[in-house]
Every structure is written in C-alpha cells, then in structure tokens.
Amino acid sequence: MPTPSGAPVLVASDLDRTLIYSTAALHLTGPDEDAPRLLCVEVYEGEPLSYMTETAAGLLAELAATTLFVPTTTRTRAQYRRISLPGPPPKYAICANGGHLLVDGETDTDWHTRVTARLADECAPLAEVQEHLLRTADPVWVRKHRTAEDLFAYLVLDRDLLPGQWVKELAGWAGERGWTVSLQGRKLYAVPAPLTKSAAVREVARRTGAGPTLAAGDSLLDTDLLLAADRGWRPGHGELAEAGWTVPGVEALPERGVLAGERITREFLRAAS
Image (cartoon, rainbow, N blue to C red):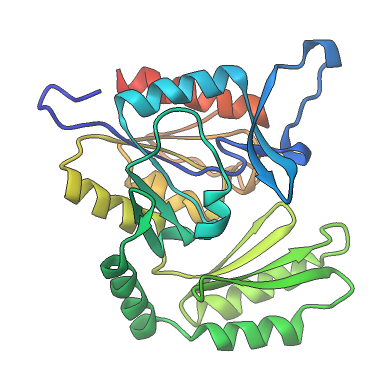
C-alpha cells in the first residue's frame, strides 16, 4: 500500500524462524487437535521442509500484493529458490545476508561486485576463517563445515555437546578480524561484519523510492536490519529473545514458533495500512 506521498511501504523480513519454520522449530505445545493448519512452503530432496500456518500464508499473500515485500535471508540463492511463498513473486529478494540482491529472480552482478570489494578492503579473508574453524572446532560436536556463496562460513552442530566457551572465544577472535558470529539453532555462522541485510535493503529503498521500512527477524544477523527499520518485530524465540535484546521501535512479541510467524505477518499488515 502506498503512503500518502505515493511511496510504497517496504517490508523486509527474515525467513527462517521468522516467517517460515521447520518441523523442529514449529513449537506447537498445545493439544494436537488445537494445532493450526499448516501450509508447506519448501520442499528439499522430495521432502517437505518448511511451513507457515494457513492463516499466515493468507496474510502474507495480501501483504505481498499491497506493499514492497522483500524476503531478506542469510540463505544462499539456491536455498532461497527452494521456497515457494504465497502471493506474487517478490520483485526484489536479498540472499546471503546481503551479499546477493535478486531482481525478478536474477542476480544483480553490480551489487555483488560492490559488496565483495568492500569485504576485501575491510575484513580478513574467508580462507583464514575457514582454517580457524577447521582447526578449533571439535569433530565430536561438528556435523558439517560449509561455506555460502564464497562469502561466509557456517557449521552444523550438535548443540547438546557444544561448549559455550568455544563460541565466546570464536566471537572474540572473529571480531578482531572484522567478522561476527551468530548461533541459530544447530547452525553457527561466521559472517563478515560489513555483510549486512540493512545495506541491501537501503539499496532497494533507493532504487524504488520506498517510504517507511518495516522489518522482522530473530537472530543476531537481523539486528542491523531491525535497527535500520522504522518499525520492527522479533519473535519470542531465537538468538535475540534468548539475549533479551530490546530497543525502541522493535516490539518483542511473546509468541514462539510458527504462531510467531503468523503474528508477525499480521503486524506487518496492520502497520502498512
């Protein structure tokens, strides 16, 4: 919906554990007969992987039809393209934590070139971080070592065995080299500090002349996005909730799991209208 000035409202939202949820993250704690109907929005290797409530799906379709809705994710482009969100296909999408800007589904190479040039100037190289992770992360609790789009690294972990002190030490080591660390569920991300969702959202706003920006997210990697928005929401689960992170203009919602995603879409629509 355009603002009185005619500028569209820009809605930039994280996806995983904000709008869409794996089976492990649904957090359906009530009686089974009271559970909401779910819509599968992602299939991986022939199996359903991510869901929204049917109510949230309807709200998101309305939101995408009336605002400039921009999915804003740390997922790679290939991982993002597995998702089939309700509503019209987004004109813009942000992948790899801001490293890639998709326009009508295609990579904007100029944006990616600008991002990689900045990372080369301001941060230690990915290879150095990879080597450190391989050397210090114990195979007892590491299930997979991965890199994403040649931009950042992540580990798939056994959280029950993960030593908390190692995460703190890694964060300190990474910070000295211009990198940040985020622990989200079973994944630990090491990401260059200048690689941000908010920078890519600002680029979309510049290109489109968008008006107010609304945002939502659940992790440390979403803080810059939430701080840059005019209004924001975070769910009652995730890295930010566990840290008790609150700032003016960002509402901490009590809902957890897939019902938080439904609440967030409802808040987006209410604020946009």
